[in-house]
Image 1 (spheres, rainbow, N blue to C red):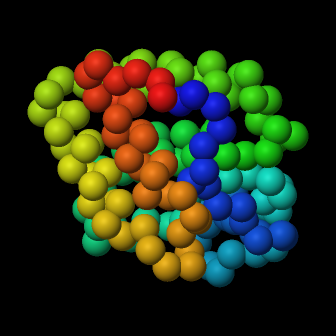
Image 2: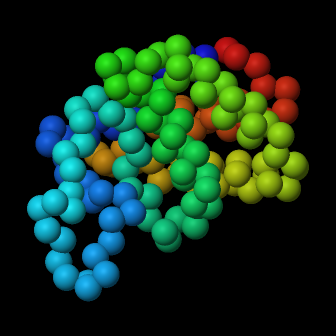
Length: 141
């Protein structure tokens, strides 16, 4: 996507997240070992409510793009990030017109909700650029 972009948020120091894929089968409350400390310097999206109706696969892609493009260089090597980001954009540019239209609609919906303190500055611009880059004939600006 042409270098580091704004759009990710830096989690508060000491942010605690559940361990992915770690579910308690007995439905008991989480224990201390069910969490990990999120490293400082990672970029991520705020939680996107289901009510927005955004395709979960798009959210997963956006989370990856924000992580790769917005995390500190000590977390993600910039050259590696740029290589993977380029492949993500190239892959998304192969969407057929119907799927691309749905993605662009979801991006517009999401852009309409990126206000308030939980959203990082520059998120609307990030979403606009992402939409341009997955559209046919997109060029780096």
